Image (cartoon, rainbow, N blue to C red; front, side, top):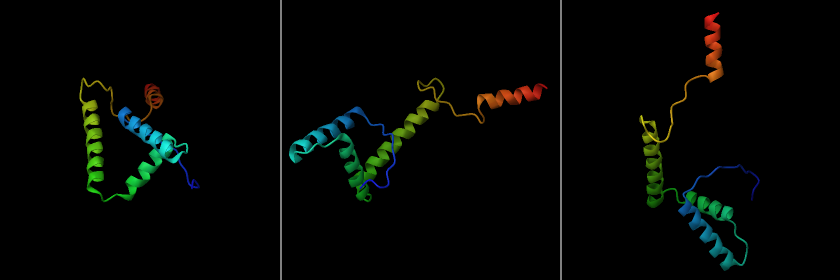
Length: 104
């Protein structure tokens, strides 16, 4: 089952995580087996991927993508709360090394 594994950091809204925990609890009670949050999330992802053409799934993906776009757009505006700024090329050390070389 787990021959080809990788790790993923998943950031979820608290209410979504709570719903998954409730589902794990219900499954544990119904199956009389310990069902972890990880098992529930894995199954939900696998089942969702099987329904790639389902309109509701596509609508949910669209909603998430638009929310991320708007959050990033807002962070780029001057005076935005999220202090996001595009990265400059080169690290600070590389830039200072270039300046030191130019002064010589």
